[in-house]
Image 1: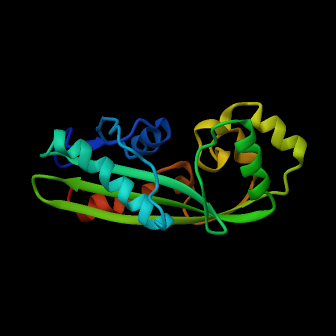
Image 2: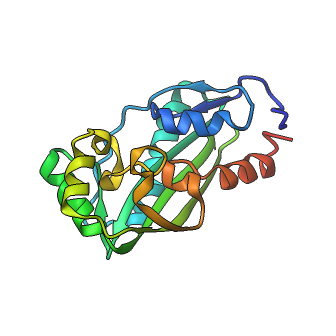
Image 3: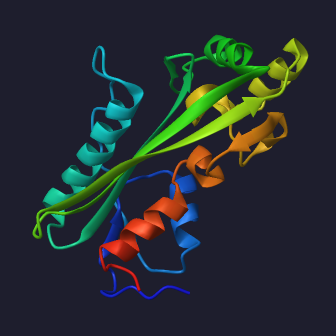
Length: 196
């Protein structure tokens, strides 16, 4: 479908299997290198600024190792009424997040950066999707948390997994909610001449 103009020129700065699976849908070859950075949010940092910074730092860290390659870094957060909901640390966190999200709209932001250190190019943007979660019962929440699926997911749910049943409506990119806005990423790769 797409032609990559330099084989093995892309490195995904992530260990997320979800991001790997989404990028594979383009049918192109790429390498994977986890960046291993501090992902803590700075005080008073807006959700958009936060995901942009983390995406850039991921790409830069891997770009230092492979300066001639195109590095894709990304970071995703769930935001409800101005509060950033990260990955739950325990059952109680997951339950509290899902109770907060039920019968409500929230936003999912993914910042992404496509960086080439040797060319001194860093293309950055943020994708935003609105998601409505159905009115979950306490029992539904407890059963879902019991599956352990929420524990490496921002906002405590996986739209592409068992948690998909609780998502009643999406306005915007579905793949953004999963963790990588593939339409926007593809457009950027095309505009940069990496794909054709």
